[in-house]
Picture 1 (cartoon, rainbow over the protein chains, first blue to last red):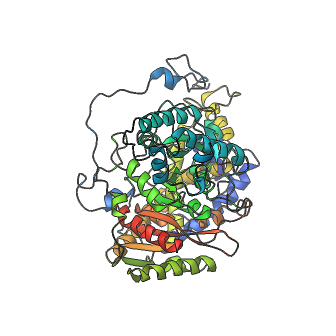
Picture 2: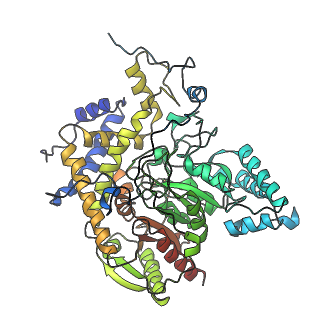
Picture 3: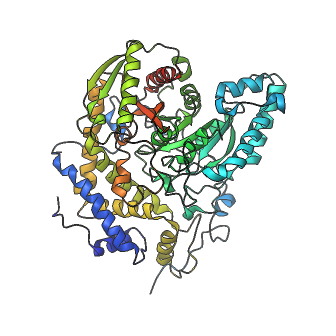
Length: 108
Length: 484
């Protein structure tokens, strides 16, 4: 466990950038306060010794039996109809009907 | 219409279907009665975000034609249902309670929506919820809070607040909600209706706008346990469009309700009756357990020793998964796009800043933090390990008992605005519901009384993976005891 010094305003800005969020100057200190409060609560997980305990991603892996007997199967690889393209494209904020249009990608 | 008026207050699935089959009413009239009631009363409650009148009435006419010809009606024939707005319905707005999806009309149906309609249900419209199903009070909806029909000064619970309120206010006979950490069971308890969290994998999630994929589940909210069994019967089962759905056979939930509960072993987990539990709720749950004893259930104390770690574990895992799932909302393919950005990355950031509410941002930030370099092992991996311990607690308990009986919530419905300033206090609302979510087991909230102030109280019955049949059976025993 890293030394817990709490989340700083710089941390909030760094994480916001990773998450593609642009927080306002009013939002930043509020988020800092909330993250510290929640992480403070989460820190009680460190009371538990979890050495040797397997990590669980979802419940299927905890149930007995093979993948098949647990009812987890992959569908067969076969061609099936997809959603109608023109309907899907019509949901986009900007499109030429074939492609999604976005502002310029490469910044100088 | 006078002789055809139906008592919406006590309308159940079987009553609706029988009334249509016998010509006492029509599916069209039932749909119109519900729309009239919504029009006159939902202005205050705010449970519906959109009505799908054309689709509902087209379906109702189809059912009426079948009834007129004397055909056997499908199991949900003419039953007016509402759909939580995180599930997509072709052509109807799907907002997930968020501004970022404003204007989005999906081009397909969620599997559960298609299944309900194929079973004869009339789809009334889309129901309000906390933004992206993140919340315990429905105060995080970008389209305004839902009020509790039992007390308009109080929250209906969340995140499926609209789904619970619509049933409680008799705007729909049944609704679909989703539950990631308690979002069906808690609002069901707050509004005095039945709410089912099916086992992870039991019900398809194709067409569900994802919040936390290892936790998200779809389930029914209804007035009776039998109705919940009827809806679950229709929506359960394997779906090729959802690789996480299970192909295990689906039980005959309605048929198995007839089996006796005598001899069933009821576990009472001591950790669910600790400090912070409202005394009136405790008394109601104790009385429920006594009632189960009287009908021949064997009651045993059990321990789920890691229960206190469920909330911190949940808020790491759910937010980590949310931060990943919600990256798809970027202004490119659907919904909102911020206009004033002239580069792609600025467009992403501005769209997400304008489109997401405070709670969603808070959870994305927390999840991103927990997954970021240097913190992954300390938070995310640690939480996944504790999730194993929490699940083992249940597995151990279910070696000795058939179901667990506990409160759903520590308090009855709280007042609007009471907890909005303190996220940790709000998260602690889920203290009795998140462990079942993490462990993937099934659970149900059944009304079991009310407080002196008249606020509903719910009891939670949890059963092992894929044992919804036993869970529903005990739920019905509680319901019978309440009716006496």
